[in-house]
Length: 317
Image 1 (tube, one colour):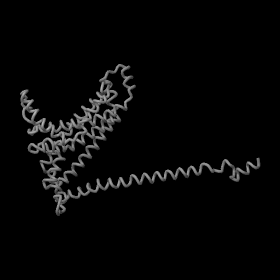
Image 2 (cartoon, one colour; image 1 turned 135 degrees about the vertical axis):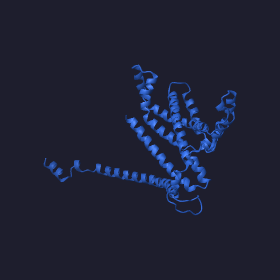
Image 3 (spheres, one colour; image 1 turned 90 degrees about the vertical axis):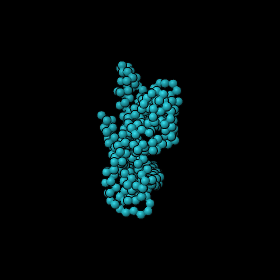
Protein backbone atom coordinates (compact mmCIF):
# COMPACT_ATOMS: atom_id res chain seq x y z
CA UNK A 1 0.00 0.00 0.00
CA UNK A 2 2.84 2.35 0.90
CA UNK A 3 4.70 1.52 -2.27
CA UNK A 4 1.65 2.19 -4.47
CA UNK A 5 0.92 5.54 -2.83
CA UNK A 6 4.57 6.54 -3.05
CA UNK A 7 4.65 5.75 -6.77
CA UNK A 8 1.48 7.76 -7.35
CA UNK A 9 2.78 10.80 -5.48
CA UNK A 10 6.15 10.65 -7.12
CA UNK A 11 4.58 10.56 -10.62
CA UNK A 12 6.57 7.47 -11.61
CA UNK A 13 3.56 5.11 -11.80
CA UNK A 14 2.59 3.59 -15.14
CA UNK A 15 -0.84 5.26 -15.17
CA UNK A 16 0.60 8.78 -15.05
CA UNK A 17 3.72 8.27 -17.10
CA UNK A 18 2.02 9.79 -20.20
CA UNK A 19 4.43 8.07 -22.55
CA UNK A 20 1.70 7.02 -24.99
CA UNK A 21 -0.64 10.00 -25.70
CA UNK A 22 1.88 12.85 -25.75
CA UNK A 23 3.78 11.78 -28.89
CA UNK A 24 0.52 11.08 -30.73
CA UNK A 25 -0.67 14.65 -30.06
CA UNK A 26 2.62 16.02 -31.33
CA UNK A 27 2.38 13.89 -34.47
CA UNK A 28 -1.18 15.12 -35.04
CA UNK A 29 -0.16 18.75 -34.74
CA UNK A 30 2.76 18.25 -37.08
CA UNK A 31 0.58 16.57 -39.69
CA UNK A 32 -2.01 19.38 -39.47
CA UNK A 33 0.73 21.99 -39.87
CA UNK A 34 2.03 20.27 -42.99
CA UNK A 35 -1.50 20.11 -44.42
CA UNK A 36 -2.06 23.80 -43.69
CA UNK A 37 1.17 24.74 -45.41
CA UNK A 38 0.28 22.62 -48.45
CA UNK A 39 -3.13 24.26 -48.59
CA UNK A 40 -1.61 27.75 -48.58
CA UNK A 41 1.01 26.83 -51.17
CA UNK A 42 -1.78 25.64 -53.48
CA UNK A 43 -4.39 28.36 -52.95
CA UNK A 44 -2.42 31.57 -52.41
CA UNK A 45 -0.55 31.53 -55.78
CA UNK A 46 -3.79 30.63 -57.60
CA UNK A 47 -5.64 33.46 -55.85
CA UNK A 48 -2.90 35.95 -56.69
CA UNK A 49 -2.85 34.94 -60.37
CA UNK A 50 -6.65 35.10 -60.52
CA UNK A 51 -6.70 38.53 -58.88
CA UNK A 52 -3.96 39.85 -61.15
CA UNK A 53 -5.64 38.88 -64.42
CA UNK A 54 -9.14 39.84 -63.24
CA UNK A 55 -8.87 42.91 -61.06
CA UNK A 56 -5.89 44.68 -62.63
CA UNK A 57 -7.60 45.01 -66.06
CA UNK A 58 -10.87 45.86 -64.32
CA UNK A 59 -9.32 48.68 -62.29
CA UNK A 60 -7.41 49.88 -65.36
CA UNK A 61 -10.67 49.97 -67.32
CA UNK A 62 -12.32 52.06 -64.60
CA UNK A 63 -9.44 54.53 -64.80
CA UNK A 64 -9.73 54.70 -68.60
CA UNK A 65 -13.41 55.59 -68.25
CA UNK A 66 -12.36 58.95 -66.80
CA UNK A 67 -10.18 59.79 -69.82
CA UNK A 68 -10.64 60.52 -73.53
CA UNK A 69 -8.55 57.52 -74.59
CA UNK A 70 -9.22 55.92 -77.99
CA UNK A 71 -7.41 52.73 -77.01
CA UNK A 72 -4.05 53.92 -78.30
CA UNK A 73 -1.84 57.00 -78.23
CA UNK A 74 -1.98 59.74 -75.66
CA UNK A 75 -4.98 60.67 -73.58
CA UNK A 76 -5.95 63.07 -70.83
CA UNK A 77 -8.13 63.05 -67.75
CA UNK A 78 -11.65 64.41 -68.36
CA UNK A 79 -13.41 63.43 -65.14
CA UNK A 80 -17.09 62.46 -65.33
CA UNK A 81 -17.75 63.73 -68.86
CA UNK A 82 -18.10 60.19 -70.29
CA UNK A 83 -20.64 59.22 -67.63
CA UNK A 84 -22.63 62.43 -68.09
CA UNK A 85 -22.70 61.88 -71.86
CA UNK A 86 -23.89 58.28 -71.37
CA UNK A 87 -27.07 59.35 -69.63
CA UNK A 88 -27.78 61.82 -72.45
CA UNK A 89 -27.21 59.32 -75.27
CA UNK A 90 -30.45 57.98 -76.78
CA UNK A 91 -28.60 55.14 -78.49
CA UNK A 92 -27.24 53.93 -75.16
CA UNK A 93 -30.68 54.15 -73.54
CA UNK A 94 -32.16 52.12 -76.39
CA UNK A 95 -29.46 49.46 -76.01
CA UNK A 96 -30.20 49.13 -72.29
CA UNK A 97 -33.93 48.95 -72.89
CA UNK A 98 -33.57 46.35 -75.63
CA UNK A 99 -31.15 44.25 -73.54
CA UNK A 100 -33.51 44.19 -70.56
CA UNK A 101 -36.52 43.50 -72.81
CA UNK A 102 -35.07 40.39 -74.46
CA UNK A 103 -33.45 39.26 -71.19
CA UNK A 104 -36.78 39.16 -69.35
CA UNK A 105 -38.48 37.27 -72.19
CA UNK A 106 -35.59 34.81 -72.53
CA UNK A 107 -35.43 34.18 -68.78
CA UNK A 108 -39.13 33.37 -68.52
CA UNK A 109 -39.14 31.12 -71.60
CA UNK A 110 -35.90 29.35 -70.71
CA UNK A 111 -37.03 28.43 -67.21
CA UNK A 112 -40.55 27.40 -68.22
CA UNK A 113 -39.30 25.15 -71.02
CA UNK A 114 -36.36 23.81 -68.99
CA UNK A 115 -38.53 22.89 -66.01
CA UNK A 116 -41.10 21.22 -68.26
CA UNK A 117 -38.41 19.17 -70.02
CA UNK A 118 -36.73 18.27 -66.73
CA UNK A 119 -39.96 16.95 -65.23
CA UNK A 120 -40.67 15.06 -68.45
CA UNK A 121 -37.18 13.53 -68.63
CA UNK A 122 -37.34 12.59 -64.96
CA UNK A 123 -40.57 10.63 -65.39
CA UNK A 124 -40.91 6.98 -66.29
CA UNK A 125 -40.41 7.11 -70.07
CA UNK A 126 -38.48 4.93 -72.51
CA UNK A 127 -35.09 6.06 -73.89
CA UNK A 128 -34.76 8.59 -71.07
CA UNK A 129 -30.96 8.85 -71.30
CA UNK A 130 -31.09 9.17 -75.08
CA UNK A 131 -33.50 12.08 -74.87
CA UNK A 132 -31.29 13.77 -72.27
CA UNK A 133 -28.31 13.57 -74.62
CA UNK A 134 -30.35 14.93 -77.54
CA UNK A 135 -31.64 17.90 -75.53
CA UNK A 136 -28.11 18.74 -74.38
CA UNK A 137 -26.67 18.95 -77.93
CA UNK A 138 -27.60 22.64 -78.52
CA UNK A 139 -25.52 23.68 -75.52
CA UNK A 140 -22.40 22.11 -77.03
CA UNK A 141 -22.68 24.08 -80.28
CA UNK A 142 -21.00 27.46 -80.75
CA UNK A 143 -23.61 30.22 -80.88
CA UNK A 144 -21.83 32.07 -83.69
CA UNK A 145 -21.71 28.97 -85.88
CA UNK A 146 -25.28 27.83 -85.32
CA UNK A 147 -26.42 31.47 -85.46
CA UNK A 148 -25.58 31.70 -89.15
CA UNK A 149 -27.63 28.54 -89.75
CA UNK A 150 -30.61 30.14 -88.04
CA UNK A 151 -30.03 33.32 -90.01
CA UNK A 152 -30.44 31.37 -93.24
CA UNK A 153 -33.62 29.75 -91.88
CA UNK A 154 -35.13 33.11 -90.98
CA UNK A 155 -34.02 34.65 -94.29
CA UNK A 156 -35.08 31.97 -96.81
CA UNK A 157 -37.19 28.94 -95.78
CA UNK A 158 -39.36 30.70 -93.19
CA UNK A 159 -40.46 33.60 -95.47
CA UNK A 160 -41.17 31.05 -98.21
CA UNK A 161 -43.39 29.15 -95.78
CA UNK A 162 -45.16 32.37 -94.82
CA UNK A 163 -45.84 33.18 -98.46
CA UNK A 164 -47.18 29.68 -99.07
CA UNK A 165 -49.52 29.97 -96.08
CA UNK A 166 -50.42 33.60 -96.92
CA UNK A 167 -49.21 34.89 -93.54
CA UNK A 168 -48.26 38.52 -94.11
CA UNK A 169 -45.92 39.08 -91.13
CA UNK A 170 -44.09 35.83 -91.90
CA UNK A 171 -43.81 36.42 -95.66
CA UNK A 172 -40.80 38.70 -95.25
CA UNK A 173 -37.70 38.02 -93.19
CA UNK A 174 -38.08 39.03 -89.57
CA UNK A 175 -34.36 39.88 -89.48
CA UNK A 176 -34.97 42.81 -91.84
CA UNK A 177 -37.89 44.15 -89.78
CA UNK A 178 -37.12 46.62 -87.00
CA UNK A 179 -40.28 45.52 -85.16
CA UNK A 180 -39.70 41.74 -85.41
CA UNK A 181 -35.91 41.36 -85.48
CA UNK A 182 -35.86 40.64 -81.75
CA UNK A 183 -37.75 37.36 -82.27
CA UNK A 184 -34.84 35.48 -83.96
CA UNK A 185 -32.47 36.68 -81.21
CA UNK A 186 -34.80 35.45 -78.47
CA UNK A 187 -35.41 32.17 -80.32
CA UNK A 188 -31.70 31.42 -80.70
CA UNK A 189 -30.93 32.40 -77.10
CA UNK A 190 -33.68 30.18 -75.70
CA UNK A 191 -32.85 27.28 -78.02
CA UNK A 192 -29.22 27.29 -76.98
CA UNK A 193 -29.69 27.95 -73.25
CA UNK A 194 -32.52 25.56 -72.36
CA UNK A 195 -30.23 22.51 -72.26
CA UNK A 196 -28.02 23.74 -69.41
CA UNK A 197 -30.96 24.88 -67.29
CA UNK A 198 -32.68 21.55 -67.92
CA UNK A 199 -29.68 19.71 -66.49
CA UNK A 200 -29.75 21.87 -63.37
CA UNK A 201 -33.44 21.19 -62.85
CA UNK A 202 -32.83 17.47 -63.44
CA UNK A 203 -30.16 17.54 -60.75
CA UNK A 204 -32.67 19.15 -58.41
CA UNK A 205 -35.34 16.56 -59.18
CA UNK A 206 -32.88 13.77 -58.33
CA UNK A 207 -32.65 15.13 -54.77
CA UNK A 208 -36.39 14.68 -54.12
CA UNK A 209 -37.24 11.42 -52.40
CA UNK A 210 -39.76 9.37 -54.40
CA UNK A 211 -41.43 8.29 -51.17
CA UNK A 212 -42.80 11.82 -50.86
CA UNK A 213 -44.68 11.39 -54.15
CA UNK A 214 -45.90 7.94 -53.11
CA UNK A 215 -47.27 9.34 -49.87
CA UNK A 216 -49.01 12.14 -51.79
CA UNK A 217 -50.59 9.63 -54.16
CA UNK A 218 -51.90 7.65 -51.21
CA UNK A 219 -53.48 10.85 -49.89
CA UNK A 220 -55.20 11.34 -53.26
CA UNK A 221 -53.00 14.02 -54.84
CA UNK A 222 -52.89 14.06 -58.63
CA UNK A 223 -49.87 14.87 -60.81
CA UNK A 224 -50.63 18.60 -61.00
CA UNK A 225 -51.04 18.90 -57.23
CA UNK A 226 -47.85 16.89 -56.74
CA UNK A 227 -45.93 19.35 -58.90
CA UNK A 228 -47.18 22.52 -57.17
CA UNK A 229 -47.20 21.13 -53.61
CA UNK A 230 -44.00 19.02 -53.74
CA UNK A 231 -41.83 19.45 -56.82
CA UNK A 232 -41.87 23.21 -57.24
CA UNK A 233 -41.28 24.12 -53.56
CA UNK A 234 -38.43 21.61 -53.20
CA UNK A 235 -36.82 22.95 -56.40
CA UNK A 236 -36.58 26.41 -54.83
CA UNK A 237 -32.75 26.62 -54.66
CA UNK A 238 -32.43 25.39 -58.25
CA UNK A 239 -35.05 27.88 -59.45
CA UNK A 240 -33.02 30.63 -57.79
CA UNK A 241 -29.73 29.74 -59.45
CA UNK A 242 -31.40 29.13 -62.81
CA UNK A 243 -33.21 32.46 -62.76
CA UNK A 244 -30.02 34.34 -61.87
CA UNK A 245 -27.85 32.55 -64.44
CA UNK A 246 -30.36 32.75 -67.28
CA UNK A 247 -31.07 36.46 -66.72
CA UNK A 248 -27.38 37.38 -66.43
CA UNK A 249 -26.52 35.38 -69.57
CA UNK A 250 -29.41 36.90 -71.52
CA UNK A 251 -28.40 40.42 -70.46
CA UNK A 252 -24.98 39.73 -71.95
CA UNK A 253 -26.36 38.63 -75.34
CA UNK A 254 -23.68 39.25 -77.94
CA UNK A 255 -23.00 36.28 -80.22
CA UNK A 256 -26.67 36.04 -81.17
CA UNK A 257 -26.72 39.67 -82.31
CA UNK A 258 -23.46 39.32 -84.26
CA UNK A 259 -24.63 36.20 -86.08
CA UNK A 260 -28.23 37.22 -86.80
CA UNK A 261 -28.70 40.97 -87.14
CA UNK A 262 -25.40 42.78 -86.59
CA UNK A 263 -27.31 45.25 -84.42
CA UNK A 264 -29.67 46.19 -87.21
CA UNK A 265 -31.84 47.09 -88.86
CA UNK A 266 -31.13 50.73 -88.03
CA UNK A 267 -29.58 49.83 -84.62
CA UNK A 268 -32.89 48.32 -83.54
CA UNK A 269 -31.31 45.16 -82.04
CA UNK A 270 -28.19 46.60 -80.46
CA UNK A 271 -27.60 45.15 -77.02
CA UNK A 272 -25.31 46.82 -74.50
CA UNK A 273 -22.61 44.19 -75.02
CA UNK A 274 -22.71 44.62 -78.78
CA UNK A 275 -22.68 48.42 -78.51
CA UNK A 276 -19.65 48.34 -76.19
CA UNK A 277 -17.78 46.03 -78.55
CA UNK A 278 -18.76 47.68 -81.82
CA UNK A 279 -18.31 51.33 -80.87
CA UNK A 280 -15.56 50.81 -78.34
CA UNK A 281 -13.17 48.78 -80.48
CA UNK A 282 -14.05 49.92 -83.99
CA UNK A 283 -15.84 53.23 -83.50
CA UNK A 284 -13.16 55.23 -81.71
CA UNK A 285 -15.15 55.42 -78.45
CA UNK A 286 -12.84 53.33 -76.28
CA UNK A 287 -13.01 55.38 -73.07
CA UNK A 288 -16.67 56.26 -73.61
CA UNK A 289 -17.70 52.62 -73.99
CA UNK A 290 -15.44 51.67 -71.08
CA UNK A 291 -17.59 53.96 -68.95
CA UNK A 292 -20.61 52.20 -70.44
CA UNK A 293 -19.13 48.85 -69.41
CA UNK A 294 -18.60 50.08 -65.83
CA UNK A 295 -22.22 51.23 -65.57
CA UNK A 296 -23.42 47.94 -67.06
CA UNK A 297 -21.32 45.95 -64.60
CA UNK A 298 -22.87 47.83 -61.70
CA UNK A 299 -26.36 47.22 -63.12
CA UNK A 300 -25.71 43.47 -63.49
CA UNK A 301 -24.36 43.26 -59.95
CA UNK A 302 -27.41 45.05 -58.54
CA UNK A 303 -29.83 42.85 -60.51
CA UNK A 304 -28.07 39.67 -59.36
CA UNK A 305 -28.12 40.86 -55.72
CA UNK A 306 -31.83 41.73 -55.88
CA UNK A 307 -32.63 38.38 -57.51
CA UNK A 308 -30.74 36.41 -54.88
CA UNK A 309 -32.38 38.30 -52.02
CA UNK A 310 -35.86 37.96 -53.52
CA UNK A 311 -35.66 34.24 -54.29
CA UNK A 312 -33.88 33.49 -51.00
CA UNK A 313 -36.77 35.09 -49.12
CA UNK A 314 -39.23 33.06 -51.18
CA UNK A 315 -37.37 29.85 -50.27
CA UNK A 316 -37.63 30.69 -46.57
CA UNK A 317 -41.37 31.29 -46.89
